[in-house]
Image: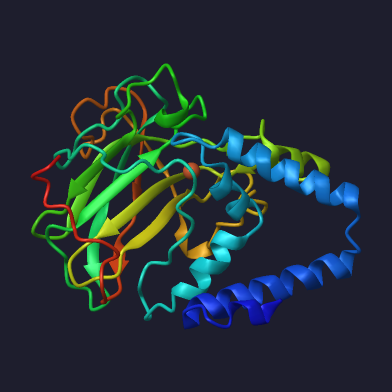
Length: 285
Ligand SMILES: [Fe+2]
């Protein structure tokens, strides 16, 4: 069987040969029955049918089976001091609007306002000006805009450009734990195996800068539920941050904070290297 890939290009031959060998070994190890085989095929069919631009069930499989984190771990041999990466997740939508430093990314009320800020730095501690910080998060109804028919398309998502001192800052909301979509095949698997579908509260970021490796990461709320049982295994201790409760009269309150608010600070340290894709200069936004 493996010999049938003899004429394939080297990397494809390596990948396909290993895939087939491991797949055959798996079938023999568990003595897969014809009924189980049919069940597996219908699960794959259901995964295809439920998948769309807005519903990434294949990414969810990869996340829920720990494959996304494994690929991430293999790829990211980071220099000391660089911010750790974690899963992209199924809710990223490219092309968020570019907004000004300090902007509010919530198009409508979505929870406790939170000043999210810090600097983008090199591993030598030098500020990186003009880095792109691409953020998306859920609101207190647990949903991302892409899942929420009641939310404008650009609700709780934006891109920012760091200032000359490397600073970024925006008003988001305090994120809440949410269930990954559990009404499809991945949800069936979680239920059948007695696993819960919850993720601890977090904000997503992708940071891009010329001459630096693109960083895909989260800011996790250090006090959230589910930090020790994330449904997609994405928690890394270095990514936990305290969301500090602040008062309306706080002299550091950004404009518009007329009730209780939170702040969370995190510097984002990029490793030198090649960006995954060219940094968008904003002219097409
Ligand atoms: Fe998320």
